Length: 173
Image (tube, rainbow, N blue to C red; front, side):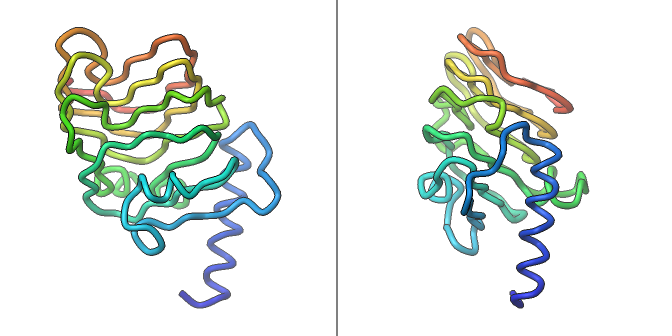
C-alpha cells in the first residue's frame, strides 16, 4: 500500500474509533492487519497491546478467537466504511465446536470492541457465538447466526459482566 494511502487509512481508523470507543488511545497504538501482517485473527490479537486494533480484511476465518487481557478493537473493514457487505463477507467460523467462536474473558471494559463480523458454526454447552465471562466489552454491528448451545446462550452468553451489545443481528441460534 502506498505510504500516503496507508497514512490516510490509519487516520480514518483513529477518527472512527474515537467516535465509537469511550477510552482514549494508548500513545503508539498499532493497527494489526489480518491477513496482510498476521495470518489469523488470533495471531493479530496475540500481538496486541492495550488500545491496539486488529483490522480484518473480508474473508473466511476458520478459527476460535480469544481476546487477550487488553482492551483492543477487533473489527472488519465495516469499522472504516459502515458498508454492511463487510459484515456478511468477513466470517469467523468455529473450528472447535465446543468452544465459543469469540470468547472475551479477561476483564475488558467497554473500550474493548468486537465489530463487523459474521460469527457462526459453534455447537457446545453454552455461550457459543460470543461468550463474555467477567468482562464488559462493546459488541456491535455483527451477525451472529447458526450457533447452537445445549443450555444457554447460543448467540451471546454473558456471565458476570455487563457488555454493551448493540446493533447486532442474532438469528438461528
